[in-house]
Image (tube, rainbow, N blue to C red; front, side, top):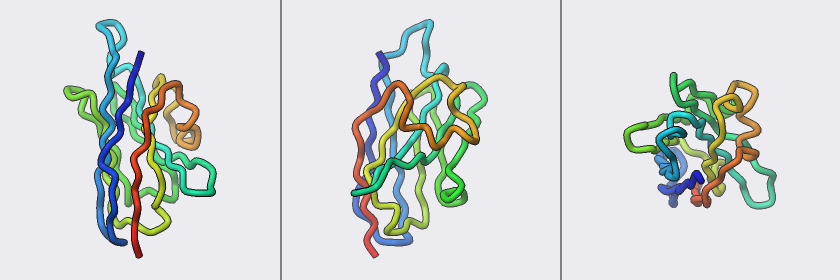
Length: 132
């Protein structure tokens, strides 16, 4: 079974940057990391979850929540079974617990980012706190 481990959260001042990592494991010869899309969503205190981004295996197509385009960049290293979320120009409203998820690539598309919280597999979250 696919397992995900998110890390890299922390406390940062507004305008700063953080890079989150999502290390994935549990793959087989016939069902590899490249066969999965990896997503990120976040949940702020008292708010519903918000899809952040997703990236497919294969061609590495990436999609973002409209409000985060230009500040967040998702990438993947298939050799390390790891996906990264580079977050720049952070704002206090980016404060949340960030979760990485995994599912088949069909669920990762422009209109599917909002549903990354529904992916089949989810790791534990990593806290991101942005101070003003």
